[in-house]
Amino acid sequence: MCLGSTLRLTPEDAEAVTDVFPDSQVSLYDGCLMKIVLEDVSLEIKILTIVPLSCSIRHRGERVEALETSLQSVAVHDDEDFSIYDWIAPLLEIYETATHLESEKETLCQEEKAREGERQATVQEEREREREEERKRVFNFDRGSIVRGPDLVDRKSRFYAHVARVTSYDEAKAFFNYLRYTDKRIETATHNMHAWRYKDRDTLKICADYDDDGEAGAGAKMLFLLNRQERDDVCVVVTRHFGGILLGPSRFKRISETSLAALAVYDAECAKRSTSKQRK
Image (tube, rainbow, N blue to C red; front, side):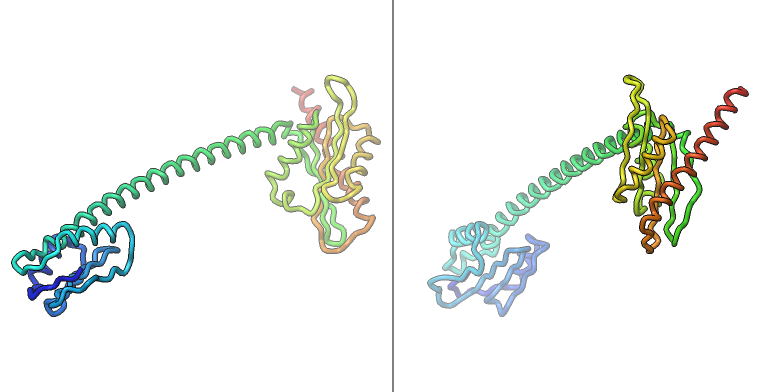
């Protein structure tokens, strides 16, 4: 704001402003210009010998316009009427209002963050419940029956198989998922072909199927072995780690050999358990 007057702005005036606004920056120039900077509001008080027709406002907005209106209401043309408090009072009012609004905004922001935190916690709890349910499904089979056959290496490609007792499709998938969840090498393997065969307890029919896991034809050959040996209640998972050299048709032979070797270990383990039970 601009004042047409012969009065002078003094260091005492600047000190008075600082007393009211401890966080403000007050600059006094030659007794005719005082600049008050308070956060995002800047007020310049100029003492001019000639009253200008208008004073510039660098930025417009609700707070600036409200400040301008308030300052115009306390226009001074008489040196005796001048009081620095009259000029900073509107600034103080707007500053306090803005501070209150900022405080409310901060409170709302904190409440929103708290709600978001609660929402994230709820989502996390739901995910944990889902994972726990998945783990229960994964482990829902006879884990004590799992055996692993010997490794077979051909031109840097490694094959090995796991066998377990299963009595349903769900158990077959649970066995496969269990291997993936508990062994990172299986999870990251090139292929995990598996085949299963079991007798349905309700219909007494043989149920059998396979999953190639990207190695077309491998699962069918594994299932062929189970059918030929008339295996009941069993699932075979053959894992292959590619060694960088293509094996061609030989890979199917290695898959079959690995399956048979693991089934032999499974039979031996079952016989051992049967003998142990008889002794008891």
